[in-house]
Image (cartoon, rainbow, N blue to C red):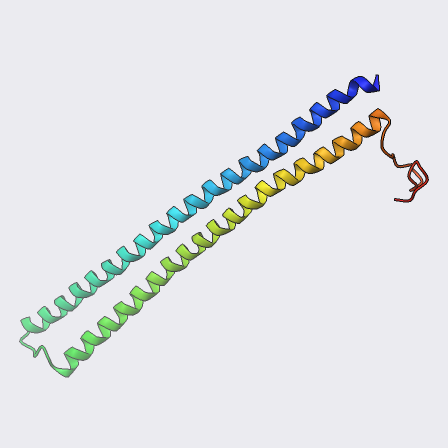
Length: 167
């Protein structure tokens, strides 16, 4: 009866090993897809950073134009030290705000790229683990088949091998 179970044990082992490999491949594919999505989102964030910078520059130009127009409408000198100082402060504040906003976008993009790299590495590891699990299954199945067929050395409960050796 034990001899009839051997082909079934071999088939079960092969199926389990194949399943481990396919699970690893499937997980790797899902992680690679997520990594590609993160890369795409990082590119979108880069675009948002450029748009935000351009928007800030346009706002600065509009603010400076309004300031100059207001001074001209009042008949004040456009190149007076006070006017130049105020314009310089407006520009400095705008550039600082633009830098802070752009840095926030750049940090977000960097984090997304780092996440994508981590997911690509995890995909490689998932694929490897599928094969390692399959190898473990095959080794375990080989031991079961050897034990069922009466071959190989089985461990005795005392810590001694059935043939008298120590494992």
